[in-house]
Length: 41
Image (cartoon, rainbow, N blue to C red; front, side):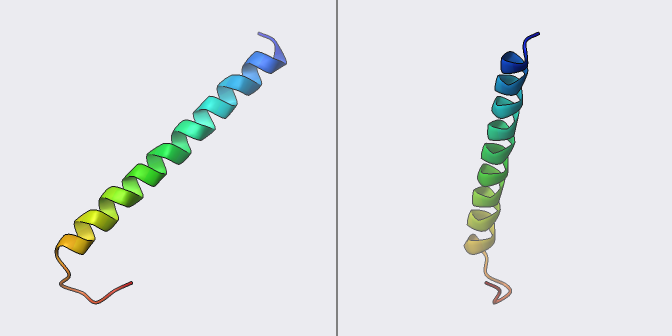
């Protein structure tokens, strides 16, 4: 495997992880906003 291919795989994994985190945060915020039992941020 060439270093460029390895770098591409690493970049794809990193982007996938960031997307997963962003989606999880969006779902969590949406779920939290639906029921505001605590006055948080």
